[in-house]
Amino acid sequence: MKWTQKETMLLQDMMNSEQICIEKYADYAERACDEELKTLFEDIKTTEEEHYATLEQMQSGTIPQMNAGGSKAQPENASDSKAKKPAASEEDEYLCRDALDTEKHVSSLYDTCIFEFVSAQARDVLNHIQKEEQEHGKRIYDYMAAHGMTA
Image (tube, rainbow, N blue to C red):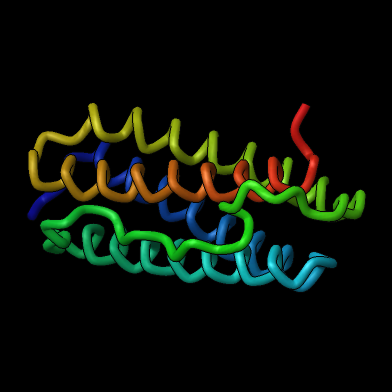
């Protein structure tokens, strides 16, 4: 696949954003006080690494095949339950708020890029990634709600 100049620039922008996410989630997994939150950040980091690899494939001219089932189902964890968790540390709350803002930004970037690509297959791949970014935001929000971080 040969990309237009604009598509090439957009792929690089998305790769830069994914790299920032990878670094951020690695750092946040180390900094988080709560083990559940550490695991959440590590899990999201792994998916961000997959996104980066997918974009690398696209940059080289290959459009990867996405699973027909769409996004991977996320494992149910304790943050999905209705039981109220202990209040989170200020550090964990800061990490969650920043991570949620990051996911909003990255999802917005994908939204724009989906409309800019000529290839329907490329748009499908980017849409798949965007859905996973939205799932990250939901998982972070659910954790925050379960730990009294939402207003």
